[in-house]
Length: 183
Length: 315
Image 1 (cartoon, each protein chain N blue to C red):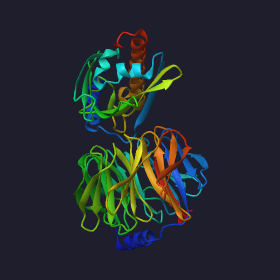
Image 2: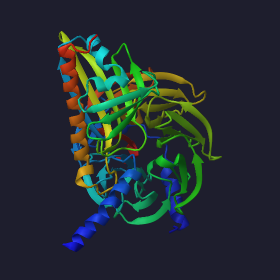
Image 3: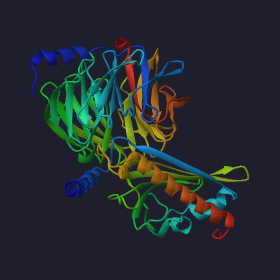
Image 4: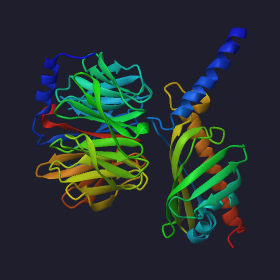
């Protein structure tokens, strides 16, 4: 027993170090979540279009700060309720098309999300009388080495990203349909 | 681990063939674990392959697939896509380049920071050379040199493929990933994912001669058969940027699917078409190089990443 415990305590930090050293792996993963909202695309975009204002509708975000506005190169820092931090850089923001794309910047915080690098696109489109919001991402698992531990595997990354997007979209729907933050 | 000169001679002979007149386009789907053959008329036929292929390369009537998480390279028939054998690989194989006779395949080891020369018959590693960090794609030129995009070292490593020794490193942009030679072999185009640009390298001087902007996150590069155009897939923008190789000016920006990655150009009769693997959309965009317009979208298995053209001589 003593030996196996010792083995575990030695192995885990090494695996983490290897994962952190390789921000980009060879096998990207994808996730996509969407939700329909009973509000016009303009109204939804007014709430969610501002890159730095995600804290107003995403229930997992405890605090959001941003610099550079909605210009390419703009940045937002999200402190999550789980204690982790995400730093996102804005690649493209299209007001008319109601869409923006961003990617992670800096070293990954595996406590925030067990992924090592991601890019994502957020889009509000018309659907019927209301809107459909789509949020999709391409990312790499938390440990991009050949033998990732379960908590930093492709599957763990997909599960966490899907949950983060789904929870966010539910939160946005609640705000948009509740009409709280439209004005 | 150097090799005797006769092998180099074999390389040179095998590489000097004229461009094929008719070709088969193959697309590898990572999530769907399929090879898809695209016919000139747009029909798509799928062949199952082992899990999670990342890249596909063609040569000598064979196709080679890398499996970064599977410790293996799959060898398949270029005519049918039928899997012939599995070559075990002790590393995280990513980029592949095959000799024109199909007897040799070169592989980058993403986390091993090296390139290996591998016998296609049995997977034996014949030689290894060090690269920079996280080597991604690579190409083999007619004189037997390998050009490797060292993604996290902002450089291209140039390797003598006969001796398997690095002969030069060329600084490029941030996060070089894909690269393509022009038909004459005099220019190498390197897409830089994080600096959103393309580095143009003179392959005689082994120096960068220009850096030109592409779109967001360039992930694939191809040159037209006449050498007049270079095409770059922009993963972040969902577009293909077309540049004139003489002026390096952008002549067109063409909308494709989501997260386009691999791109290859095939001649079809008098025309040439580019095939773009849209990784997120699970389809392939077809671009006519005369009109510079997208002329079709062909559904394939989930997660298409890489495109290879097997020439008439490869079948």
